[in-house]
Image (cartoon, rainbow, N blue to C red; front, side, top):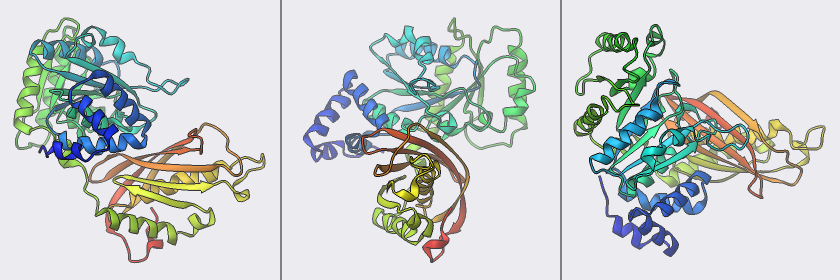
Length: 419
């Protein structure tokens, strides 16, 4: 799966080439700075990610998810100690809820992992979810690729406390671990169609509690009722993260699954869009043929894999009764970028859900840029994040949208293709 990384680095700009060398050498400061750049989605970070793509696919990516209170962070802390004892370099990407005050990560996960995080072989980074669906953050995949290129043996991705539909980790991880607290009871039935279904390994944590026996049995019963699947048989294990009991057996199971299923599977799952020139031509055609986008003077700027950028200069027709840009106009810009990006794969994408938050007011003459980025995708559902920024870089609004990917190819006329 590895390509010739030397050739990629040799043709990079000098500043990118230096950063590439530092990251590949495992320099922690360089890795941390690169992650910050990827989170902020600056242009140099996109060039860096493209250059590092040649090195992706070697690390074992372990996704850890489960309902809130299951003890995921404490279990990962115990896992890190066991991995370190086996001489492995481990990185953790912990998705924390966003602070309602700063918008940053709450950092609860890093507090619980402080003991193992002090080891030189361990690198821990918390990311703010920033409202993204699926229990992950927007930049998670690119950051995992970066850590993969930095030479870590395993990368553990911990999701925000997940519910039934928060299964985005399955598209990213080589091995999905679902942590279940004791006493699930009827909750097993409530969530088995969601996160339990993606598990390669089921872990009953806090296994010293009285209800652990019953929970373990319920999980085993659930697996027997599930349709038989060839290949790997899902394992049910019990751990006590605070004492380390059962953790060596869990690491053995993770290693066994990596041997059975392979590593770097996220790269094979990534959708392959049509050739860039064909995609951009199609998307420009969508915008040119859409009368509502013309009415609002929206400008198509550029497109790339899974992303579209559009722009709007605030004009008198965009103003509300307070003389500021109407929220509906900002939504139109974000929604258009979302819809155009979602239709980049040759089939009609039907919008099924959107959510918008507005941060600051904007005035006539301000130039607003909406950049749509694909957060997650499977055969049926894709989730997009759109950030609307002002010319000075201030975030004006944030938008998330979900589409259902139909199997209906686009019609001949671009104006028939609105999601």
